[in-house]
Image (cartoon, rainbow, N blue to C red; front, top):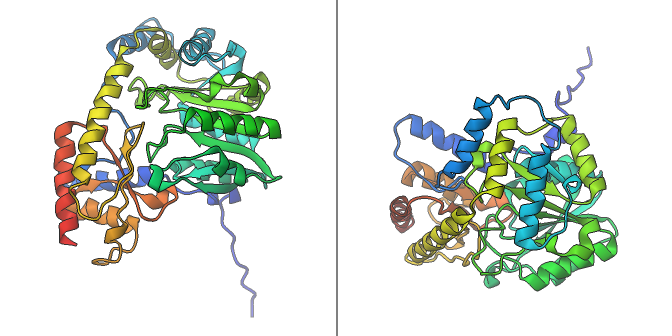
Length: 398
């Protein structure tokens, strides 16, 4: 009798370690319903409801019309790298040079590249919980091991330096920070941020600071880890123009860090995407060097919408929600409803909200918790009211 040999997966071990982004998966499922004519209220995607400022659009159009459509240097045009470091210095007091900056195809690419450059097989990376959906997969793709640190939900998911330090071991290679946080909206205090960065520096541990929402900080104390000059040797700042200037589809981001690290990030980028789109780089320069009024306008509207959604969530019995201090998400605790009507997990809740209440949300499992869902309030006040009315009716029926 012939021996049957098991066929292994045709795909690499590294790609088998990761999953499709839960946000993208929910968006895809919503698209199927929308194609059938279902009237959805989308609180899923992390995308500003504002349009890109006109002067930024004009710069991109002008670049195309002037045929600025060829390859550029991998790390971005000198004009853009100068604009990145100048804006960061003006806003946060940092001290980077153009050769310590790399422009990328969105902040996610900068983060991915930084982790691939810094993290090797078996290295531990400290990741606070709840975490942005891609942190875990990006670390695991690199062969690293995530060491999770739970934020204090009773203190609005506060994260302290002591919490982080307790998780450090001899194998810790990096710490990923995200303040303001997606999904909770939590903001680290200036003291805790400084203590974590300096502790890591003393121990030779890199801090990768994801500052995608750094300008959407409602505390009145907008801060960047990049202002901690003495720790610069072990610090990589990941930035994005997506949320700050409503440029999500433009895919414009950057990394700031030691020249040696940035050089390696650029090397990796040279073998993947090469330079960001040339006309997008010109638009990014216009965003960074032009009027900054839109930031204050966006932030003020998000604060208003945050207060609205918190007030509406408070009307749903059993729902608890930490008060976000930044970004544009709320992360309500729906544990009071688990165990009812077949709802066993936050994924069950999110799926039934989608198919029965026609509201698009993201389950907490994607962010490392079991009892929450994420709602984006980057939408119109009217759409938010309609979505929360539907949600209240849904939970009243289970």
